[in-house]
Length: 419
Image 1 (cartoon, rainbow, N blue to C red):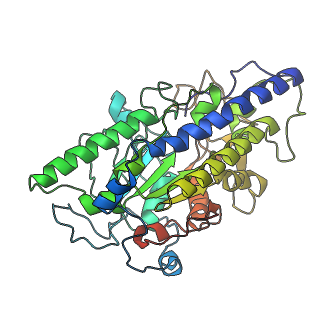
Image 2 (cartoon, one colour):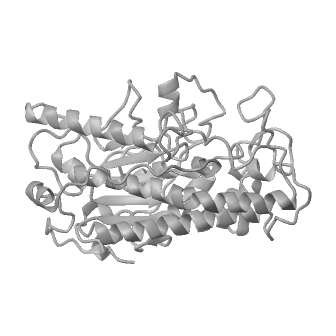
């Protein structure tokens, strides 16, 4: 994640109202960017029928309840082992339980893409908890997407741009830190990530047609879950309406879309100078930023409902992570979070330990103790402790519309598409 809604030095009641108006002007555009991108290249109904991509039409009869019961709890154990690994050749003899995930996003789900793309040699303390080494994740450990993979007993997703040590047999992570949903808003904006996926898929199909064994076969693409977690970076700029169609036309039928979190609770935002504390709520978060985040999620959820009506043979699940992340602050003692509004890695000490000019990984960083339970890692991104809590709640389907477990998308061909 990069810049916030405003730069340091802002503040004052008049500016709050002005900013509020600006935020709401762009929110609808942001929501449209994220979801309408999923409709690019939509084929005709005849074309869909010809290739047999129907999400409802496979007819294996797997019930939602049975599939949902297969979900496991988020664990904190060692390196996950894949339930099924290996490549997929031209044939389609793979078990329907094979997990394939294609993830699109920003630094909230970047598992090393930016580091690979820019040749960044990231050092500790990044990755100091679980991995005990830096992996390119902007956290001290695992991200929500990592816990999702672990809950399905499949390995963590490899970044698309990682040239060495990648394993794409269970999917690909196209997420890059700092990315935007707005085309041109960043080097690896959502449209670029989508084109990377299309290139990956096209090349895979070419090799399959030549009889070459590939990490993911036709069934893998057809049954994959497409997760989208992007948009927070866009809340700093005005939007241009980009795409009207995307992944759906290339066989995608299972979409899991995340909203944005409680921006007003981030130490980065809270450290911005202000005239007074009138914009703080009872938990110490900025009301204006959080109102913008809630409105963004409301419009993104509405866009998902429209997509469900349009794509009757697809499952489009919207997950509002705002409530889960705000709860880390509102009920931090119940979660064992000691410092909900203070960055573990930053500069300046209490109350927020965030300094835009002396951030985490700088020579002057101030680092919390290894066993300390902070919600924020660097003022913008979350710690492994916080990500584990959020992931555990997200996986239950409690915050999703329709209310389905993530695991239900793996085997099921009949997930309710209403709500």
